[in-house]
Image (cartoon, rainbow, N blue to C red; front, side, top):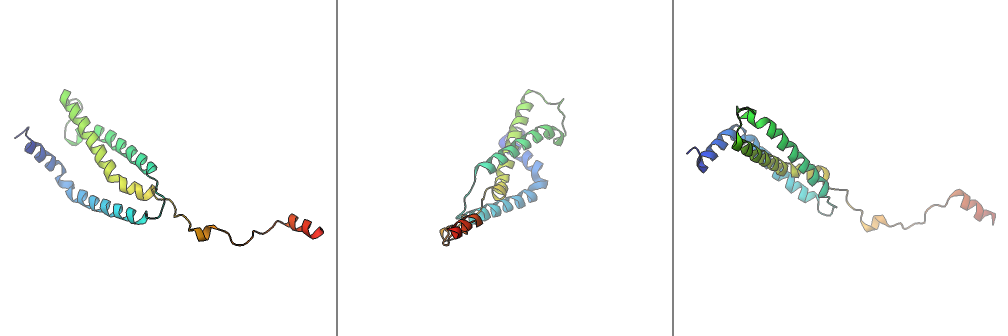
Amino acid sequence: MAFSILGLLAVVLEFFRGWLWFIGLFLLLDFALTFYFLKRSTGCKTCWILPAYVTVGFGVFIFILSMITLPTITKSSWAALAGIDYLALIGASIGFGALFAILAFPFMLNLLGIRSRPRPVSQATRTETPPQPQAAMAEKAAD
């Protein structure tokens, strides 16, 4: 069972067992923020580019952080890694970076994705004439 799918899933479950409650709360908050964004964004201009760039940057940061810390978390060291271990470390780090980027995207959408509401047409048009400057009024009075 050491190199079977069930064996690998058992190891991953044991690795995350202490954090499952936190991951569940975070996913619930993520869904709530996604629905809140969809509710707020109706009738607004939404900007998707800036939150996407920030989220990708956050994913790259988590990738680098997990590359550095994963050997220590698993009670190993960089000296104990061999050829295939580096590939596994890179794969796990890419997975962590992608996971945290996906989880951070609703936060970034709510922080950076909604611009101000556009003004209705009735408020944007001016019905009265603008006040004239004093010099123009003095010229009209002199005529």
